[in-house]
Length: 168
Image (cartoon, rainbow, N blue to C red; front, side):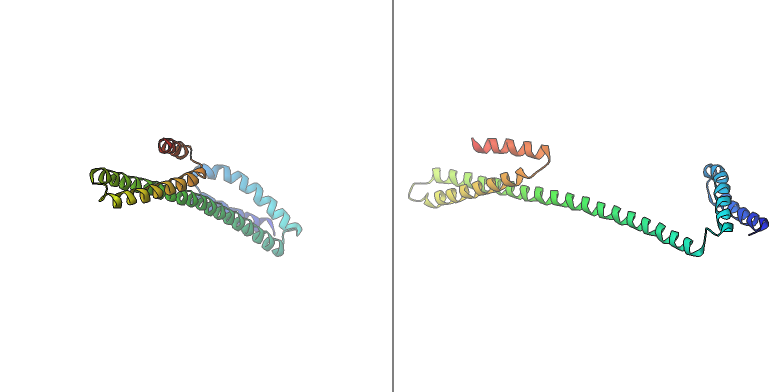
């Protein structure tokens, strides 16, 4: 490659840089590009840069970029998986606490009915009250077991206060 061909290539690269790069990048780019361009041309003239080396370098470059993008996608997927697991545990905890509240309200309503009815007629309310108490106990045990796996401090403290009230 003679000096006139080298000059033409350098002018084309600088033309591209001037028209397609922002002005702040172009000023530093102009100097560094000329240095790199002259080094690449000198390597080419010595035979160190061949088509085979260019193809291998291009393949390696795109392989590294692809590996980085794949790693980033895997990290994002794993983060989303962890978030979804936390949401699933909290949804099950919410369901268990809702079942506690629902059964407790039903038990409380049956207690009022059992106290207002004569003993002969109150057996259905008393049976329903004991059934609802078993449901409350089972749902509270489930809520406590799910709360033990919660990593959020606000959730564990709220569940501890609910458990303290339940234990009274």
